[in-house]
Length: 88
Picture 1: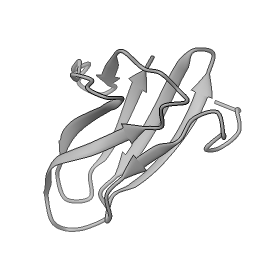
Picture 2: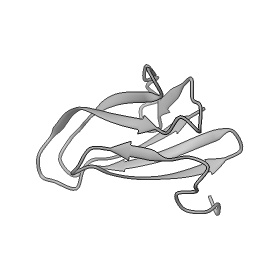
Picture 3: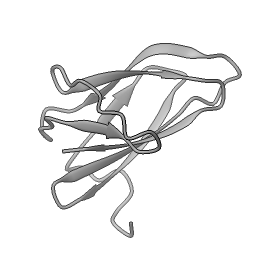
Picture 4: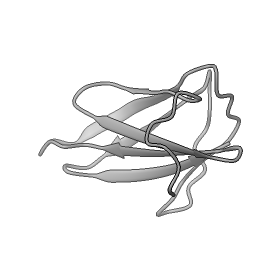
């Protein structure tokens, strides 16, 4: 993944204190989300700006398919959790 960090062709929004970064490779959007706190975060929304349309999202480690609604999905984060998603 030598592509630019957080390219302008896509944009990801998460609620504080979560932090997110992303890469675009072809028609795939790779999203990296971190919970930097010692507290669990339940049902956190990860939103993709409408300029990058997505219809599917898979969490990398578990291969879970997450439902997409209005260019966003939700997930739970354990303390100090890091998750990677592939959306397209």
